[in-house]
Amino acid sequence: MDFFKFLKFGFVGFSGLIIDFFVTWFCKEKLSLNKYLANGFGFLFGVTNNYFLNKYFTFEDTDPHIGAQFISFLIIAIVGFSINTTVLYSLQKKTSIDFYTCKILVTVLVFFWNFGANSFYTFKI
Image (cartoon, rainbow, N blue to C red; front, side, top):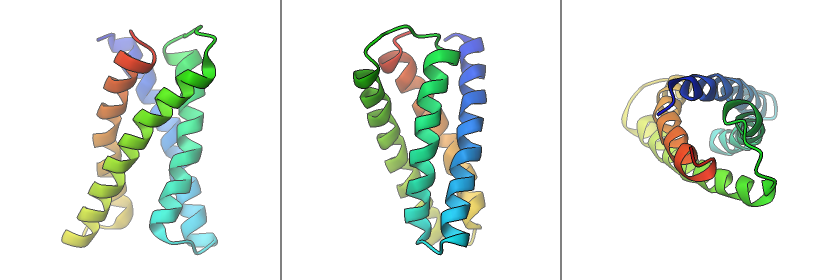
């Protein structure tokens, strides 16, 4: 594993996290959407940001097949999102931990899944 890529992936992930949390907050608190639907919108905006930043910044990838590569990235992200939503839902139902604290805990877990899967499949390092 390339530690520098791991750090860059973390930096990109943090930018996606900020986008994800802002969009989630905006949809939940300002638009009064269901918290899980708001979480989905946050995910969508965050993952799109992360794909492009990871492609060009983290992995410095020059593969011209952006469509196929984005689909791969998206599938991995959807699996991560499924883990995210399932664990988030379970934590909310079985604990008294605040929604946003749960979201942070789950995000850390999913970060490791996303880095590993994208490193070895999408960007093939």
